[in-house]
Amino acid sequence: MTEAERALPQDRLTDNIRLFAADVAAQNPVHKKFMDNALVRISGDEIRHLDAYIGFCLRKGLDIPYLAECYLTIVSDTLREQVYFQKNGRYRHARFDEVASDVYFNPDYMRHYMYGLALTSFLWPNHLAMFSFFRKTLPVAEHGRYLEIGSGHGYYLMTAALHSAYDSFLGVDISETSVAMTRELVAHYMKDRAAKPLEVQCLDFLAADLPEKSFDAVVMGEVLEHVERPELFLRRIRDIAKDGAYIYVTTCINAPAVDHIYLFETVKQLEEMFAASGLAVREKLICPYEGKTLEQSVAQRLAINVACVLGKV
Image (cartoon, rainbow, N blue to C red; front, top):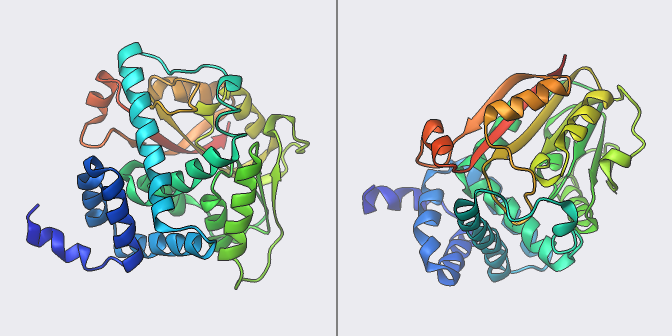
């Protein structure tokens, strides 16, 4: 890509995005090339959404250097865990209690993690592709009850509330910090919309009192790799989802992170777990490591992201 080709898309960027990119480069010069490429390839609509999210954060009293720091927390932690994984062939941790206190129940780290992860949704190709797949497959005219397991930073739940016709929304997460962040995000983006029943609760999904066949949509993004027994989550989803419900699940293959504890090594392994849990893949998106084919990613044990729309068998 020539400098002239790079300059034209940059003209689309807002002041806040330029400041964010500059601060990321100042804090981590090695990451500048990646950031430049990311901002070239995202669409005008995606730029608008990124600018709106940064604007939301600024109105909360955060500043650009803090957001850059949050984003680079994800970058540096992921790189460190990738090095460990390539050297040892396994994730650093295998039990929930090895990561919970340092991540989910550590408010300062969790805020860094969630703001940083939300920003990757606009900038990292695989994360952006999964969010686009969610927007594409989310039923916009269906009614009923929507449940999100592991609402995290809240952007998926907010998107569903804004762009679908479901009548009520429930988000659950084990982190009080995530719950508070999701509530703030939803309140901000929904402030000019007609109110719909929407709750975000801090609870353990497996222990929650959720009746069988009670939800018309169940969404669980990036949870399976964070738990010791992902099949229990999938079976529970099958139980609480109505027949014909929209079920959207994402996870990752060979993708080390600071709090990833369950290692999926192949897409086949994941799909076999779906089948054993009474769920069938209706649509799927497989995102190999950037710049690699799926075969190369598998052979080199590089991160692969997977998003699936599932149905009850």
